[in-house]
Length: 120
Ligand code: FES
Image (cartoon, rainbow, N blue to C red; front, side):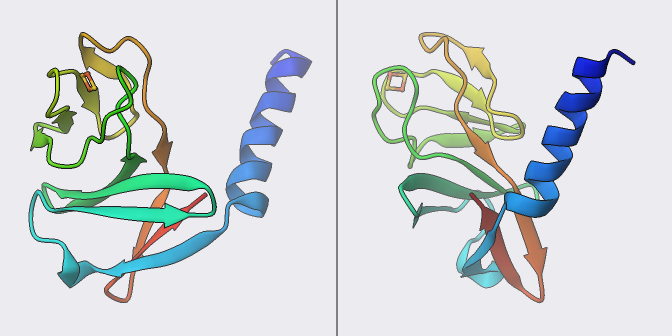
């Protein structure tokens, strides 16, 4: 392994273990299947989604024209922007359909004791 790859792995580990701080944002019962909720943590505006029994946290705003993704359709692990139809993976934020070309941010989510927490 190249030394720079080791450094990247250490940085990822450090961020995941030492710097991400989880905040409880909801009870699991607050979101039904395909439910969505606006969350603000620090300066981050986040859309919490429940889809196929799991919780996901993505950027609240679409990377195309910065309109809210809230209200977009959730299907097959992706969210479709309600404005111009861009599609994003809610797993990793990647763009699945234009007109957006930039991915959206995703946040780590933890479910414990019937609560949902997001790390920022
Ligand atoms: S604002 Fe989302 S596709 Fe245009």
